[in-house]
Image 1: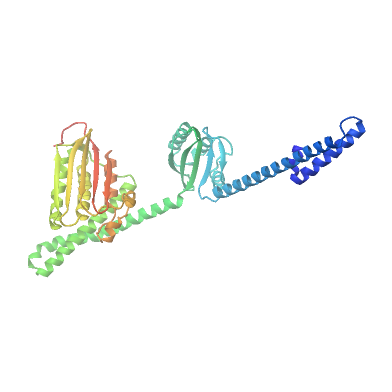
Image 2 (image 1 turned 120 degrees about the vertical axis):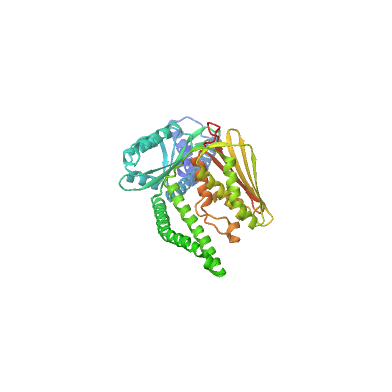
Length: 426
């Protein structure tokens, strides 16, 4: 009766209970023994029909629950299938549990086998990527570290398609590893855009260099005739010189960023004293500070000898100090501090300038990005300085940190490993 009620519903369950009562009464009459009085029949009828009724109610709830679950599963499937990225969930061993349609399509396009764990399937296409040895090593690391968050990129041979993969561990309510989410994204268009942008930057830089060289040459020739020019002519010449230097710096920055992106930045390392590098950078920035009526001071708390490229580290300090001067109003101050802390040479440049909104600080080291505090005040700049600074610092094995509050000022701290020999190269 319970099974019939669950299967047929409450009304049919009640009818089945009445039918069962009738069958019981008939069977008693045929067999010839058993209670047939009205009370016994009534009790059995109520029990059987009640059982059918409640089983029917329970069955309806179960069916509604199953229908709701199927609807939820369909919505979830539609949701992950509508994602642009390929997504799947595996157990801690890498066995596939759930996958979406984009991932299944990408797996077919990449030639992955339809069996095995996800790391095994990824290893199967190692010969089809541009750097198979590095790829195999990375896939083995992923298989051995199921609780790691990772991000990797690889390029397919022949097609030139570039893919970026991400993995994130999944934990249960007891914080035990339950599995891992894998995502695969086709970033071919993004990488092609990057290549086009880099090519454009390199082309523009090259095309600007040629006329700038001619302008600089003629400016040197005009310097011999400057005494014969009128005051107005000399002022024009000063403007031309200043603008030419700005364009030259811009071209050099663009070319340097292209080198950084291509990982072709080379350093000429030698032991050097950061205090001496900072002193030269502060001296070079003093005229600009005086012109803006700022206080620019160097605080060298002892020497800090590091293994570095003098010209590149000068470029780092020139960028940081010029930024501090540029973004600080009249009456403010800029302090440059050099110290040796915990086996590192530390340089900090702090100012009392306009500061940077907290929401924009993560993007400061992106190419061509400029803070709103700079654009609102029409402060000139290209948005390349901090990109170059970070690349040079990291190439030296150092770190860079930025702390800023809008309207209060900014502090940038660079830490570099101390040289093995505490001597400065002659």
